[in-house]
Length: 351
Image (tube, rainbow, N blue to C red; front, side, top):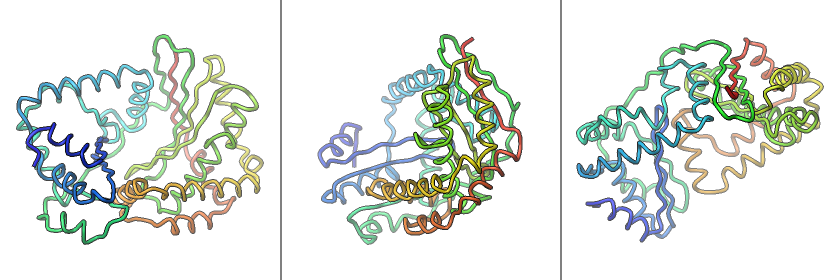
């Protein structure tokens, strides 16, 4: 339907369709947003992208240059190089979780149109695709476009075993004015947890390092003035979870930071008061409500849940899970993580 790229971009513009796509290590995401009145045109675009893409031989060289620029831009930043080294430290250099979405530039430069066609025809199959729709539309309207696609060969990802490196990583870069410090604990992933446990870990991160009211923020920034900010995050992969505490401090304050974080994590009963816990649950409740406040947010949330968790969860289900979580149970979760093993410590500072 679209002989050239310009025909495609003109069609998007004429119909008010926002289109974007990005790739991670094991997955590819395509995102569209369009007015209700342009549902048919939006579905046409998605169908064309998923099943009818053509590759122009004459344009490949230009696209390789663009990807080369993206590759150079990304890896010119010290923070990105540091994140890559952390991934290699905790997962292993060649593990799929370490794989970067930008790819390996030598492979990009060495690929031809036949390689792209091969990848596309073997990957963009109905059995490999999950589509989440949200908005003023019906299932019948969607199935009219996508309901009769032939079955394909489902891609089965193999995640393999981690080949983690040393517990301590020092990554040096020139010209840095602060040291970046990331402390990592490995936990169970999607396969070893249920949705309620993952809701609880989100609450845990909010209390520990989720903004101005979190206990680490108040200690490290407000009381000690060591850092501008500090955060806690818990990312789930299929076979492993990654709990991290991250911040930046002056080189001479690295040890002081590490000692204070360890001390705070050892005093959770005193730090996480009943009032603080109740307020954090309220904050989490309203954050979840707002996450379902737009069709785009709902579609993205549903698709990710179906892809990685195997089913979708309604807002009401998530709020019910949150309501059942108690203070002592959450403190025990934190302890089970930080006391289970020595963490991985990753530091980036100036040479």
